[in-house]
Amino acid sequence: MTDGAAASLWARPEPGTRQSRFSRSQIAAAAVAIADADGFEAVSMRRIAAALGAGTMSLYRYVATKAELLALIDDALLAETLVPGELPADWRAAIAGVARQTRQAYLSHPWAVQALQGKAAAPAGPAGLRHAEQSLAALSGAPLSTRAKLDLLAIVADYVSGHLLHAADAARRLSDAETAEAAAAHNYVAARLASGDFPHLAAVAAGEAAGDSADKRFELGLQLLINGVAELVQPAHDD
Image (tube, rainbow, N blue to C red; front, side, top):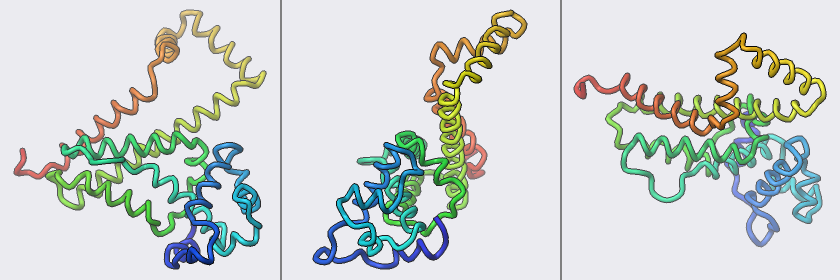
């Protein structure tokens, strides 16, 4: 998303129901469905219009620019990051729940992390505001200053983003592994590991093959991160 161009999307009301055939959420859902099916590169106003049974130009009444379309998509994805129901009473469990939900939302749309990476964030839309509110609510019972809470949220968000980028890169490498060149490289490495010259690498590879999952690593890192940061920023009187 970009600057004020996308900001204007949220600043103006949606077309009234009597003049409107579609809602912003319907347009965003159609765009996300196209990206899920055919990749983010396939998303266009023409494809969205066809999916909705509308004329391409008619959609510009709802979404004026590419930046606004990206803002709609971003906000639709953020809606999926909201933890349903009540948050746990324990603040550590609550912020961990927000992190898990955010991770799962973006894992459900593997194209999203790389497609939206590097785009300047537009002023938060409705779901973005709710996500921020829920994140702060998760830490409402934490014995931390406001600054420390914001720092913890930023650090957890960075951790989740890094994990998602790694997962997207792993998926891309897995796709690339279908080529003959990649198969030859894999066979070479497998033969070297079988030689016994690289016991530590061989043990790691065996563990991966046995199912040492990304889920387990994510959970371990998340708990270490939350507990470690909480210890560092605990108020002195809590020692």
